[in-house]
Image (cartoon, rainbow over all chains, first blue to last red; front, side, top):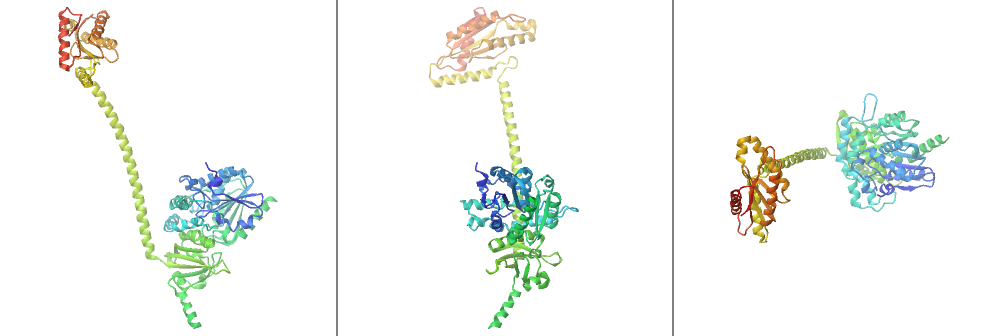
Length: 269
Length: 330
């Protein structure tokens, strides 16, 4: 049994002592953090991870059943925290990576001093009259159909690392296996589980203080969904960045780092 | 010359594809007339809007997750299949490609959208056909699974049937009163024994005997058939208890029993049957004491079951003639 550190292609960098674990979202890999890394690496010890089925995670790390749900990926993160012996760490998750981080923090509250969820949502599907996730049933079905028409592009998004076009060193991986790992068979069940999923009932079990980061114009996650997270997570704060899009770590890394630092210092005071 | 070039550049506005220039935060800075025409609005209305707002809700996630993400990542995106949101809830399928512009300001990108109504329809039909096939395949697999379960059930029924048939066969080969093998079974075993002995050309010896209860008819006449049956059952038990491992005893007639004694010479068989005769004589019979007469013969080369049984029968006759309660060789 290989270590998860190896299986999930964990890269450790930075000069600081406080550990930060960074978890990417759907269809991405750890390179999504590359514009944030230079801002954080002088003050923190960073752990970058590729979720099973994505990026340079080893093909043997992928389990068809387990990795078709966010909680399956959260199990990996819990085991990884144990393996790394993480204590007092900050865990940052983007989009579904935030949900995965949230689920992991319930299992290992002692490992984390802070949970950061960037552009995450507890549920994409509307639940009228009280919950606005941003999507109707028909729209989510339409989205999944559109993903089928575009699946090659989703695949392309992930596979570029295999071609050596990445900010982090590429591990020796069989290119063929990499392409197999990102087949629509990996994407389809997880996408279904993410977009039709509901993790609202987990939120009240979170004890780690949290920071919710949302962009001012995220067409993927409505502000109400971020407000819902903030309202239902104990000792949480919501920061809305003056930036557009769903990827502030790429489009506004400085603003994001600033919000992080402020929140961490405020907690320290 | 210069004016000509600018005239030509004006045609960018009427290109057969929608074009927009977008900044690093996804805000539209410039759009051509074609795009404005599709969306039934003016250029001014488009400028400063989020580019993601041009698309249907379904498409926004892909616009952000694929197009915008890859643009900010590698600066190049090709052929993303999205739907523009038109007036009156209409949609227009477009194939989007985008490029990061220039080197100075890396955050500016040009997005080019080609209308693909026919291609979209065909692809959807293909996709739906594929999904229908997938569903049919899943249904087929479910049916196959069901058939496999049924076949397993059938198989277990079959083996039960086989067991019952064997039991029936056993019952057909046995005598229902005593539980001993019947004549048919005895004949078959004797035939098999003869076939083995003849085939092997070895000096294999075995013996066959016939046992008949002395004066059995008066027992039935005097005490009734119930008592006669009891006697037969007690004798069957006694025979079974006296037999050696490979010996076989069968009830071949009313009060007539046959014995097959493998690997037993005529003399050894005679001695064993003498002990058996004595055991019958000494047995505490209830309610009527009986004795038996026995005729025994050994295998001779060229023997058939008929020739052996005839010799045994002749010997039995001799035993009876000798005064009964006697063993005679034949």
